[in-house]
Image (cartoon, rainbow, N blue to C red):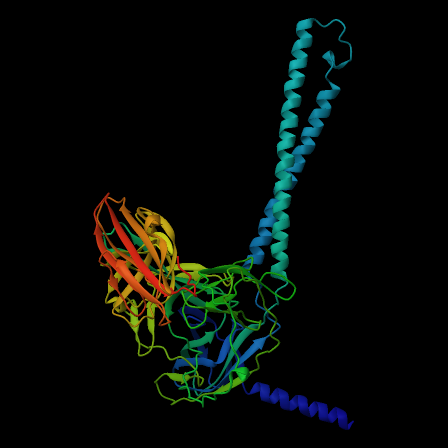
Length: 620
């Protein structure tokens, strides 16, 4: 009896508490998205009539990857916002990626076509049986009185009709086999997609109180993870007398669980989740070398890396964010988990991250790197953010301690430079599905005056490399990124646009030009060794030939080198340098020429190395 009374009392208290807030759904529309290098801020707007009582306004079907500390709520009207909650609803799950529906539709279409083709095969079989059954003249099996012409005519008819049937049947069988193979590949993709976890939906609960009925307009914004963008460029040069045409693009991806439909996009170079705490300098503890860790990672320079990202079971993970640590250079794995990325010159550390998996940082020590990510078992918990209101007509603002505050006034220009970040606004609305697929958005086109010069180091590489030098480049708000290079209407490869150099002139490599032919050959008659007293002298001589096969003159800078002695018993004596500028500290030799069209230039490099007889040195 006492237990029953206690249960009734609990139910009464619960129902009484629930009746304090009348629940209503606040339907919002996603209007704007600011995409950061890692993450995005979503802006939604909604209207609702608030009754004269306490109400719980629930915003449903949001991304499950919301940073609850970043939630902001603005509203106009005579009411008070009491609190803002963030929840995950595991009952109303987000549909799996739209790619699943697409794959199933493709399977159904192929299966329908197979059914039709098999039905046609049955018709052909019946037709063949009918033809065989009636192959005798008259259909009665009595053809003794048939003439030779009638027999020939019957045989020709039978041969032609049967050949048509057989040929069509072969074609249909091949078509069926091909479609079944396609269905098999689609089934494998479906399996990979279905193996992914079913995600909950995010919800925001806004508790409000009004004294009278109020027509309110809400502005809600929040940060989500599992989205971002990478700067990409197309650089086109018609010839060395034309300005450089640069197309600035954003490679944007999002796998937030919610599609972005017809939203206004802004791209920011900010990192909202990056710590803003000033770093501290800790004591540098110096010890003996045997107690000191040495990084023995490979020192080879990897220009490009590619591979596949899989989970613990070996299934491909699409939409994985792959970023060169400390830069804006990155990409996203495709639907099969594959990725490819051009790296900067320095040793790169790659960061592999994806929601639900533990991030990995790996040194790019080889050109092929397959990565296995393990699941992260951490889960989000509910966080309550308490709000306030001035009960006036001013907007009501609720936000977390790490929120990003947008500008209230509309952005007019395309480039918005804030105190610490730059935002790039896209004029046309875009729709981006939550499938992790990469989408290229064109941001800006520039025609940039540039100085062109060829560089060559024939001792290392016989090709000439075209460099474009841009003065006052910081006005274009460029970021580090991969670049597609086009020269004289031909795609010549990819490079890296490095914008972190603290210089006034930005140098961009436009790749190799095969129309500048360079050779570096030994002059054998000057390569010899002679002994004088206790020393011996080795002589080396080379001829460098440069030919310009282009129709216009080119500016060329050539580099070579003399050896630099680190022992006082070794001396280097230049014999012939053809007017090169010498850097005595490094031994670098520099020549600068203007090479006329269809002309060639010859350079002679000769030097002597003197050292003790008892020793040996390694020369070319």
